[in-house]
Amino acid sequence: MGGSGTGNSPCASCKLLRRRCAKDCIFAPYFPSDDPHKFAIAHKVFGASNISKMLQELPVHQRADAVSSLVYEANARVRDPVYGCVGAISYLQNQVSQLQMQLAVAQAEILCIQMQQDHIDQQITLPTTPLLFDEDDEKSFLLQNNLPQFLNFTPFNNSSSVNCDSFKKGTLYGHDMVS
Amino acid sequence: MNSTRCAACKHLRRRCPSTCIFSPYFPPNNPPRFQYVHKIYGASNVGKILKDLPENYRAEAANSLYYEAYCRIKDPVYGCVGIITILHQQIHNVQCQLAGIQAEIAALSTQSQNEDNQNQQTEIAPTLIEQNGVPNYTSFYDISTWFD
Image (cartoon, rainbow over all chains, first blue to last red; front, side):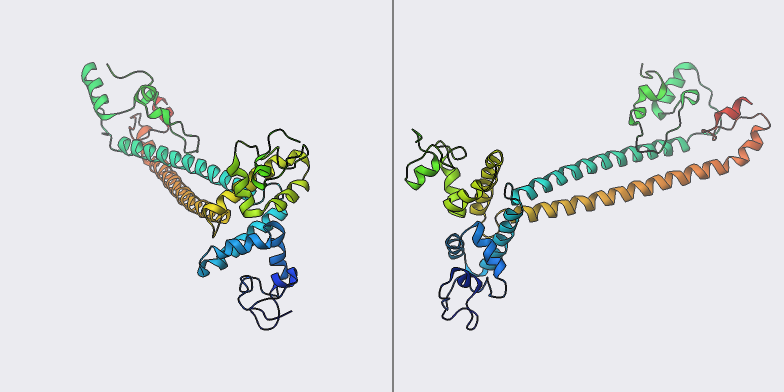
């Protein structure tokens, strides 16, 4: 066989296709003779003429990346003849969905914790001496200051299953305080 | 022979036999589906891939070949691999966000546990007052001592 892109030895594609490797062989820069498997697998899936057409339609500086992605897809198709690369895409999309759900749950959890902290901080600022009111003043005071009634107060736990419904006025006080 | 040629045989301008490997998966009402696949893989390669598979897998294989060919035509440099790269980046980004929020949750939980411990420790002094029968309004977490 004749000259090639790399010295005197034909490139991997021309070796496999058993033809003369021209100086301007389109495959030579991307399919060196020391890696025959790379072209073999790409040729098996896409065919040499299709690869050549695809490379010719691309600017020279993009051809190396195109060859790498073609070889990647060809390998995936040989490993999984039914789904090829699409199998990997489907798997990764599922992973993204699951992670996004976990993220949403974690964000909700942190909101709950922050709301708890805010509520506890409000409790810490309570007056330490008992306040005497008449009934209407007491209701007004509680509404304005969001205070729990001690006998109905339930301590919050810090587990991930915190019930944030207890932040709603009605359930926290045990009955509807709004009148 | 099929009375209506499949999209593959129409494109290849040939007779469509009843045993045509393409006809179940490349119907005549969707010509681009075979055109894309033919442009990227070639008819004979697609035929070989389908023939090498059991019949019950061929429909999925034809779909995935069409999807990959479509991606390659839209992105001639990276094809499907471009989508895989983007998905890897998305996974990495979401994992980083998740790790950050989980660390924040752990820190907040630790902080509130420390506050609980401090509140319990400071109740040692109020119990001295409680022993005198005067309830302490700061001991929220143990109201049972009010009624001793």
